[in-house]
Image 1 (cartoon, rainbow, N blue to C red):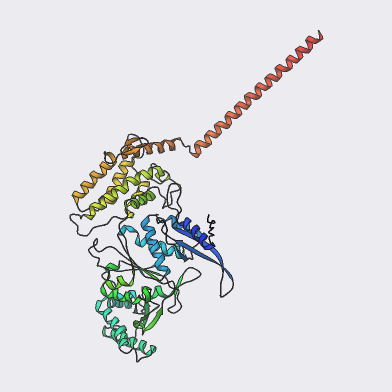
Image 2: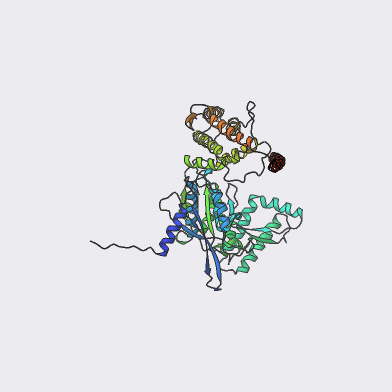
Length: 551
């Protein structure tokens, strides 16, 4: 008989299991509570030898059986992290994106996310930045388009002007495409050709001389002073977070920050070529870039500099191009599909039970029933809206008559309907209560169907919505009986309204209390009168008894 083998877990293993359990945590209803875990602990600063508080977040995909968990240092507080978590709908796609961001950020690898509009690319880039820096801190955003100026991305020389007239003239001059070309040539070609022969000061002097010649040729003041303006990339590389929360820039000692380059699929080739300069070794970001526009000065990449690109799929949007192959090789490429049916329903549930927004303290004008206080109603609404949203999205993917460019559906459409349901309610003339089915029908038509150029599709989806609310297609079992959605809405609204009708106002409570006090006083008075009468009768009886004894 072989002896038993005891396996002791190390402190590291125990800690890993605890963090994983928190990452995968769910409530009794199965709703995700984890995905992001906050930790705060004391540590000794190796330089100052002082004890400091270190804050960390752990990010992992709670939908995976064995998630890879990434630990990152954060400036956010515990309260910040908990508040941010409540603002993220816990869909599997959301955690897939956050997990990719955490992994690539930790290893300073640029990330490119390609996916449909509704997937939440921009929103999650904002939330990831808040997770690292605290609520309200957004990434440095750069939006690409067919008119994107390379100098806005890297750097450019701009004139110093004082009067409004000078500003106007310079603005008109600088808006010309040929002007931008000339400034770029001045900053690049003259210096590049002589970069091995001139000192830093000589290079800058040469640039200034050429810029003065350009101003003179345009009939502008040739003695105009010029200043060097950094673009989005060097700014993100050299930013410093100050103790008061503001940002400053240091091209050599900057810590770095997050840069979000949006719609990279719309970028022109010259923009893509410039972005390739941030490529570094082993798939990481470059440690520095050299700006020939400023005489070849170098800007160092801070340790917290990170770039995330995002774009919509080219097959769904006519104006988008395929991501440049060279750029695709330089980044971690994450392709996302559309939200699943389950995620759409989860998002709708969050919107229509009002988990993502502050509830009104007082019933707003136009509100017949405070549905934001009745999650049981919101859950039924979410089933209808998510189903309709999914069905319309499928139809739009087939193409729409009268329009080449598809206008995509987003989760914002759901959010708008949910917001409008609070204070744009129709009253049922027969019952006097909130007519939820009719209100929802009108709001869906306004926020979803009025965008359609295809009248035939609009009629089809209008009929589908009617069938979903009142027909056999939309029937489901509710409280032991198969009912239409409208019937379910009517039952829930009646129940909530009846409950509200039974609730007393402060004035009614005060009036009732007054009546109850008066009733108690009346009963006490009657008791007192009765007691006094009984006492009087008792005295007479005692007196009669004494007289009888004397006889």
